[in-house]
Length: 80
Image (cartoon, rainbow, N blue to C red; front, side, top):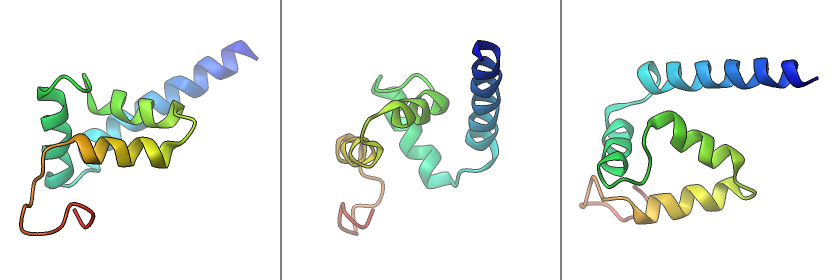
């Protein structure tokens, strides 16, 4: 059972890193880089891991969005 969990985590880590490298648009990359610069997260993968382990992922995403720097100030924060 333990080794199955380890394999599952390894597959998750690989999938997230691939997604971070190839599956994100430039705006999302800019937001994640901003959070990295501020020291909020050390990597794109850690950000998604933190959301995944949260008891309330939707709340975690909302809190993170509210604390990140705005990219497009011509639209509302909620739309962004």
